[in-house]
Amino acid sequence: MAPPTLTSIEFQKKYMLALQVDAAQFILDILAEHSVGEDEVSDSLEHLAKGWMAQEYDSNLVTKPQIQRVYELLQVDSREVGGAGGAGTYALGEENELDPSQHLVFVDAFDMPRWMYSVERHTFEKSSTPPNIAGSPASRTAFLRDRYHVIKQVVLRNEHFTPAVVPGLSQGDTNKLTSTKNLLGCAGETFMLLGMLAHEPDGKLCLEDVDGKVLLDMSQAASCQGLITEGCFVLVEGEYTDEDTLKVWQIGHPPSERRGASRSIFGHIDFLGKGATTPAEDEEYARRIQDFPHVSFVVISDLWLDHPKTLIGLRSVLDRCVETGFTPFLFVFCGSFTSRGIGSGGAGIEQYTDNFSALGDLLASYREISAVSHFLFVPGPLDPWGSTTLPRPAIPEPFVARLKARLPRAVFLSNPCRVKFFGQEIVIFREDLMARVLRNLVGVKQEIEATELKRNLVQMVIDQEHLSPLPLTVQPILWEFDHALRLYPSPTALILADKYERYEETYEGCHVFNPGSFIGNSFGFSTYFPHTRRSEESMMDDVVNGR
Image (cartoon, rainbow, N blue to C red; front, side, top):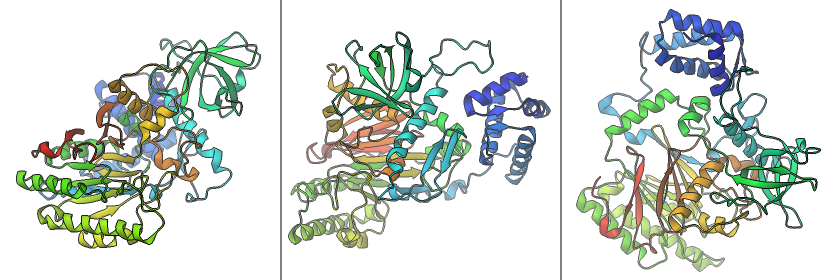
């Protein structure tokens, strides 16, 4: 059995919790009492850690009375779900009665609770006041600090940055982060910093963290790996000089964290506001979803309803679905739903409304599909009342009332929005992100091939744990709703609907894809299959064959 020191190390490294000696000994005693094998110790410690965090104690120091209480509660829960060794039902219902629609949850960005990372407690705390669209002066900087702390806690937990918990116990070469406030008087020394890239009023590039900022000298920096823009949080290594600048040698994105690792620590937190599930429940959901290989999400972007070919192409897609007996479980329609905007005149507004009515008539005419499928609509930049600020609210009710009357399963959400399906989280974001990023690159640029460019964009978004890691001057954001754009924990799938050519990439376990424009892509779209967590390219001449 592992000694108390190693048990404390695992709690410290994986859960950011400190164990008192008697608490560690108590854990060892109950592991021995239940004859827990070495291959099961990690799972047992995870249950205890999760149970402790669910109690929301005021400190990260675990005492013996606290862990005893957690153990007693776990024993009670075990008996309630069927006695010792019971696996629990996870509220999934009977095998033959499971309805996928009951596990389909839509999440609007404006309904998500605001969770902020607490440096003192090493966990997320829910804001005591609901977020406000207008924001407050304090929230102007608070959301950037929160981004910094969320990324930093991931970096410090990475194996390349985790110091030895026990003095004298080597854990290999590790990197050490330094704050900008510790640079003064240290000219000639080498440092690694984490901060946000920004420009001074005179145009000089600097790095900002919660303690201050330092000017960057990029003249000797190696070529940036990936895409880096102002507003990104980056790791910078270099030498501090007598001119109070950091001569940069290397610059890059911080390491990301897989969804499973984040969920193992913060699985008790309900980030979406729709009910939290445990990692064990997620595993059970992943098993049960294999029973539904026919379930699929069809994703169509830039569905320009004012274009004469759009409804013709959509009708062809629906005809093909009927011919092959393939009925998508969910249609995701991303805007813009107009190619020119609606203007300020009454004629444009009326035409926009009529176009949605025509779409509703078309979809409702396919009864085999409209009676079974769900329909999700996400606005684009040109949809009312479109603005450059994120998140964007859903299309107003007056424009789509007639469509919703024809399609009871139609849902209109914000941009971005999320879909929770069993244990999966799918984020949907309609933005021409590639063009924005390429226009705002900083640092040492390099020639990148198209394939590598797509991969780099995906890496940038996942590593930054945010849908729009750009400065507010480029992409305005509602300060108190910045959490709705956060990608932590990493989602199962991310739909980056963009005018840029379609692609699909899987990075750190997150599947990211862009369906491309429907009209500009020969009626092309993407089909996502939850049971494989992968997407496939689809076109009007190659519509899905029920795979």
